[in-house]
Length: 291
Image (cartoon, rainbow, N blue to C red; front, side, top):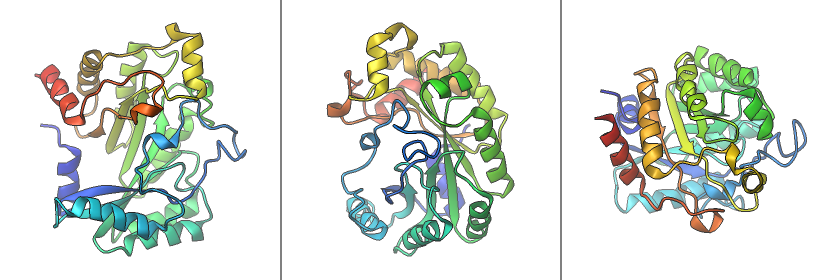
């Protein structure tokens, strides 16, 4: 039976853990002009940042607030600092080291999950992360989004599929667990295109895979593109997406661990209504499709 993300973490750390999101105030090379401006056409970081994730607060303050939220229900819980917003390896090494080690200095924090882009992992940072991983848990999560360069160009991603392959392989070669993130339903991609991504991921040294359905966020270029060209998009109902996810899982290497299949953005940010499902409700739908 395929191991769940929670089971894998518990086996790695020998304790039950919870990710706490952190906004460390980084930007993105696709926003500041290094590789582009305006960001990805789907992007609005408000869609996944909890209320306490404010750059006016230190990394430690954000983690302490997150801990208080979970500690009421789970007093023995330990935590992973999840550097989530924007590109969390895009800064001088000294600044990155200070932020990461501030997080690890918070009581109860036993490791890091670092979300980043595949074009933002220089060798010197990998040297540091390899050393850090010798005595603490680290998961590097790359925003791959698509394996198709035509899609990456269309969504203004600012890097290629080849850059993702390179970053994943270089990171895994250091013994650091690698996660990858894909969006299902990007413009111009068919169901068969998306299912083929399962094989591409299986050919790489990816340990954790995270999927989510494309959500159209208000006031983004992609929401405007959908209004102009709706036929270019595959739009899933919840039942259709559950069937799709089940097919995707069956095509994926059996030792790959799935962290997530759906994302639920705040309703006020959505350009069209969401499904109104809790994550566990969607998971039950997927399980039925797998039986």
